[in-house]
Image (cartoon, rainbow, N blue to C red; front, side, top):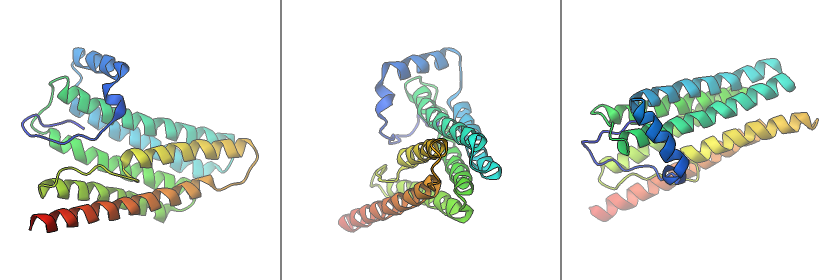
Length: 219
């Protein structure tokens, strides 16, 4: 998420942003001249690979091959989040922000959400619900930006914010793989998708109420 240094953008609170390893990787990326917008574009590639791996797992059926695809999907999902971390660090801490950073801050993330959740929906056997989860994820981002544009600040609250959704998807994929290895036929992916939907709806309601209260208070 490349950041436009000409504007005061609120940043998503990320605990790992202030760690030594993150600072080290950021310095290396800056030294190599890796543009933050290129990292943002890389997050879309990681998301496409994640969603593709999830979708392919539905074609091979339960077993070691599907489990391997789920593990790959989870790994690429986390790679997407790492790209989201380091594009902002390189842009802000590395001083490499660009005027078009605001575009790269938002659009790749929305595509990534949709691709990962759509692929996860296919893996779970509920493609329509996967698309719905992707659409609702985009709505949470819209509400955040609407609040910011209305002068209320950027609301990154959950319980179904991006980090929460991706954590659920990652853990769900790994748990389903573990269940298959153990010989259990539990529909962990379907349960996880239901959880993601519930958390995302709760987030939409929470952010909407905060916006309405903020606008009413400022009237």
